[in-house]
Length: 122
Ligand SMILES: [Zn+2]
Image (tube, rainbow, N blue to C red):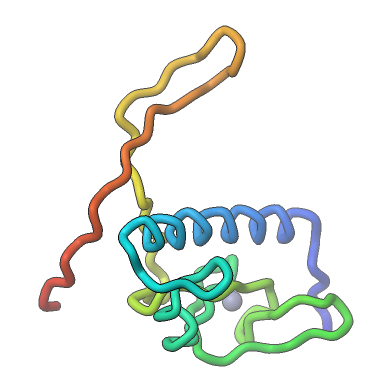
């Protein structure tokens, strides 16, 4: 492989995983059936999103890096939600109500979970 996975890539991968974790937890809180830490529906759809925003049902298994990689850009990817579409930013499962610089905690946000949007006709 020409493009090696860089430290910056791994940081973006960790960020991607965190965002998907939050979306998973929001699904769990809404009562969706889960397997380990992802909704069953995510496994059934089998969609993968890479750190560059490519979304596909196919991916590359890299034994050298131990990671699952995108077929298009060979960067790390993770199982994503069934409605995910390529080139769109991941939805936030919450909105930021307010933020402040806390004397001990630093920058903090008050977040409020949002109810799942009802799928609208495209
Ligand atoms: Zn990609």
